[in-house]
Amino acid sequence: MLRILMRRRAFLGAVRSRWVGYAAALAGVALVTYVIGLIGQRSHVGNLSMLHLIVVLAVATMFGSGPAVLAAVTAFLTFNWFFVEPFHTLVVADPEEWIALLLFLATALVTGQLAAGQRQRAQEAQQHRRESMVLYDVVRLMSEGALGEALSSVAQRLRQELQVTAVVIEYTEGGTAKRAVAKAQELSLDRTEGEEPSWIMGDPEGHWIRVVAGRDAGTLDRGRDVQLFGVPLKTPEREVGRLLLFAGDRARGFSTAETRMTWGVAAQLASAVERSRLQRDATEAEILRRTDESKSALLNAVSHDLRTPLATIIASAGSLAQRDVAWTDEEVRELAGGIEQEANRLNRIVGNLLDLSRIEAGTLRPEKGWHDLASLVHDVIGRLRTITSDHDIVLDAPQDLPPVLLDYVQIDQVLSNLIENAANYSPAGSEILISIRPTDEYVRVQVDDRGPGIPQEALPRLFEPFYRGAGRGPRAKGTGLGLAVAKRLVEAHHGQIWAENRPGGGARFTFRLPLGQPAEASGRG
Image (cartoon, rainbow, N blue to C red):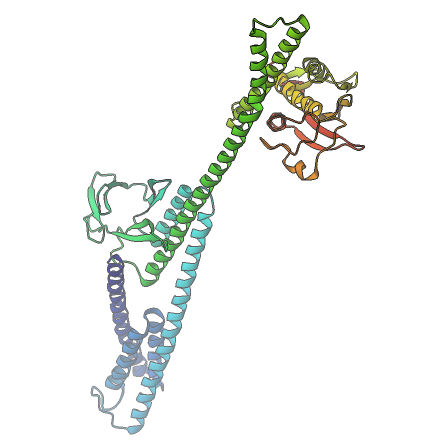
């Protein structure tokens, strides 16, 4: 219904424009006839009737075929009436004059039609160019920024192109009804809830009117009609919104080309809104998939890696609590040591889980201070003595190692995870080499072991949460969180960490941290 109304108004506007062309044709013929009369009074010039062709060409170029035909016929009759004997009659005494007049009429009609055809083709080309430019701008704007911002830019572009009072794009995003509005700055525009699209519009002087789709609704100022035209935003499956045009003083309505362009823009907007919805659904599905994978991995870790130390602790504590067994001091120390060892292991697992969740939530940030990295490594080695007791730990660090700007607790965690990983995946009695090397911009730390190495297929995924390759060491165990936490902590320090196979066998884990400048120190010292 709205499309029919828009076409009807466009037709009425074209009719009014056509009447202007007819009036211009008559006025032009009258003016040239007067000029021919003046020239004929002063001198005898042949073929003055050809001057009427100028009028025919001008009218055809400016107003089209109909006014051009009227100009040709009127010029034929006028020249016959005023300048062909006997004067002031339509009778022609000389048969040769008939031939000349008919040739003039034919020439005028053909010339007018050719000029009108050229005008129409030029107008169509200009209209197609305009439509192409607008649609190109719409596609370009929809590819920039968020959906709401892009739709607002499109609404503003369409308002400027169609010279309307306001443009509103209604759409749904994430289950919420939203709208993008482009309007003149001095206007107020509010939507009233209801089944039909009903709006209230006002101006700075406080004149408020109700605007209803497809009807003359009132005036903002005297003689200024306001109308609302709606175009649905449709995809093959459903309607995703509406494009609303507040016509304002566009009393002539929209031309056929403008209507076609508006529907083309609506189709592009519908595709963009639907594409945004599909992208959002795909993102949510991917998030749910990854969340499900994380939950499954966490459940696997809880079911095995948490229950194993808990079972050892419960069994050892239960044995110590038995009153009917006389435990020797050595046995008590062994059971208590097992409880302590498994409790520490359980504490590291829970700590890694908490650290990973805090890192991914963005709440775990480095509190940096200047520290001696070699002393930090010594502290970690001492604390992990129970884990590394079966290995020969070697520290290779220069005496003049400069202080490094780092978070002591977080880098302690990184080193602990790397050293524990090396101890778990290398045979007893083998060497674990920890080397520190400073450069101009970074300090590099390497942890080398003499285990079986890392399978090539596991290298790309080694630092993923919960990822554990096939057991490749005598005590290979864990949740697959230690390396993931280490990677995120190093990256939080603007550093890098990677793994590779060591020449001669074994694995090498390397991370590097920026040395920084003393002025950067903040937080702990």
